Image 1 (cartoon, rainbow, N blue to C red):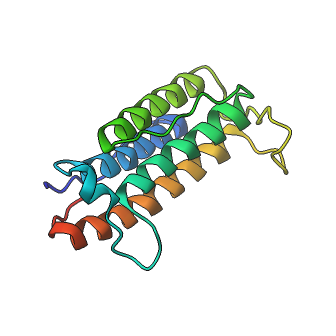
Image 2: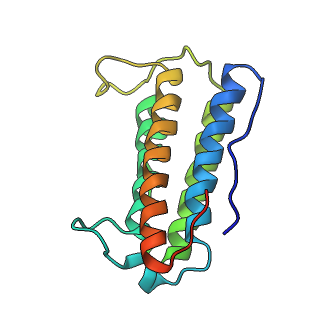
Length: 152
């Protein structure tokens, strides 16, 4: 798989955060390219971490942090049964996140009462960049163990 370098932007804070979040999301999805369901479910680590699990987890993380905690909306999160389904759910969740973020200020606070201390959207986006980047690294390792494919 071709290596993709992170975007270089001199945009404002929002543009930079969203560009890096999208880069991390795309990195995860690129790791799944060409895999079948069996490979996506294959456990190669001492933990049950698989590429399918990572995809589902990242979708859930965006849903809980943005849809539920930040926007205070009910979740409509589902888990994809197949890798293709999980990718579709992840992309839809990311699009929903982007829609919510587009109409909010980075200083807006989470609406859900279960977030203590009550953080703002800026913190949520930085957390999602961190979470997605960390799991993209896990996906790098798993994919390389599966078939030797490397690249961001």
